[in-house]
Length: 154
Image 1 (cartoon, rainbow, N blue to C red):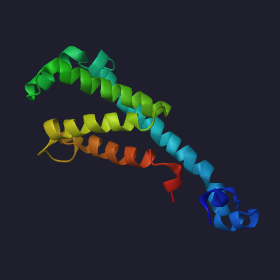
Image 2 (tube, one colour):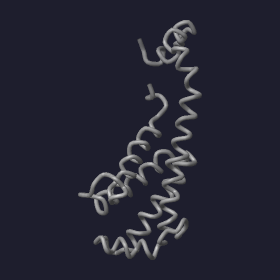
Image 3 (spheres, rainbow, N blue to C red):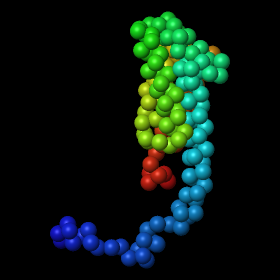
């Protein structure tokens, strides 16, 4: 058959009903609400984390304090690193929260969190109270789940 002829063929409704189970249609609302909650929570936390570094909000160090801290870790020039890390965390968190320009928000935050894990948390215990990367590891896993295309959700 020619490709143009195959394009014009339609699938009968009875076949569609057999292929798409009704339980999937019924559970899609709950899945959507769960993913929305996850996206709002993780995106909001990341935007807040970035705003601490960028603007000094929520008792954060601001850009000047972040610059000094990153230079103490060996990341020079500190201003460039601080601006890029802060902007990617804040901007990525906002994009994730709003669900806008997907997947740029999660990708930006994952890049910043990989750098944070490698430079600030590597070799420490997993728990954040001991200087570890527990927050970063949780945020990696939830971002990868929360931003999967709907077609791939089981």
